[in-house]
Length: 390
Length: 171
Image 1 (cartoon, each protein chain N blue to C red):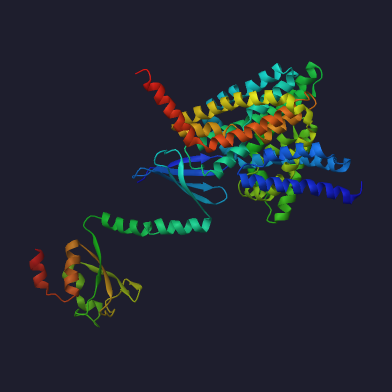
Image 2 (cartoon, chains in turn blue, brown):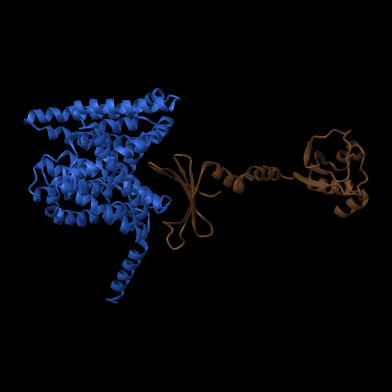
């Protein structure tokens, strides 16, 4: 394929994303569900040649790696430690309430056990990207329920960091012994890396912190890709390697790296969502519509319960509890990432996850906006009920 | 002192807030990137924010100066007053002062009242610890430290009121 044609097709896709992103800004929502839709739409109307397809595929993988790297950058190791200690209970409730529905749904849909475990991950993970966007856009960072929401997101990210290598090891399959060995290697590698990141992160941060912006960008990007590659070869997920590099970097270098990597991440993450959309077979969407809607209702309610409980424990009143619940409903980038792992296991896992993410990503922010009205209704209903018998 | 609550916001920064005396919760979020966010809660929903003001670092500094920059000076004055029996005052020298153009030593202030002149304010500037040869002028402001009584005496003396009358009135 001539270079010109490759550029034309790639440029066309990226321009379309730009338009979609602007529309999302207008509507005041995150562009993630719209990127998915764009990918689905593109897949339906045109088929890209081999070269763009390959480029987009690699770009999508880099996008997943950078997503997790910048997620790791967000948290300092102290924050992780404190959070895990302070919010254990709500974290366990969250895991139990939101992983189980996906798992059960997977079995009911006749998925392979591994695909069901993946679907559990899809329904478990709140989109911290969408949640923090809601908090920022609606000016809710100072609200009393906000620390609860953020704490739940942090714990989920940590659970995810342990969940992914295990799943990656299990996905390789083979004999029982082989699976066990893979699992042990994955867990040991993860544990060692986590320990090193928490313990010697400051040393790495000092080494990486060079005055030149260019050298910093290249150094950080190179390190992330090398660690991700090594993790992948060790059968630990590449994204987890990147996550650990992100956690290990702290202080000034993390601040600078975040500023430099964010545009790169935004580019490749957009490619990642488009690629996921492109892979979906539109003909499968009607089949998954009902299960996706059911899952949205059920896991929307369970996530809502987690937020409500957490906020109540923090002494927040009704309206705040409602806000905490609704803000946690949206699933997003990591649900897609997890579903992407199991496309080969269950063909309908991809479309199901995509439709599910679309529904929750719309439902959550919309509900979150109308906290005052809904709670007023609830209170009125409660009073009417309370006064009726008397 | 206001009791400040400090809450870490993972991935965002740190929130400091307190329940204001007049019914609303007030606080500041220190973002990791240096931005400061001021907020006040809603009255009917103390968990939510009614208003957020995001300030850049230099803007936050300006607001801090407006609000609390003088807190340090205020606290200095406060600690002076905390020393039992010690008084400090800024005494303007009126046109009627008998000491216009005379050296500070000629007032014999310390001998007569027990209060000391620790500084002279002149033309917008301060002259700290002036010596006895320092020439006073009408329009100066004299900073006097002493007992409360001594400072009152000094005020009268410096502006030419007869000492006798003053002691008679105050004793």
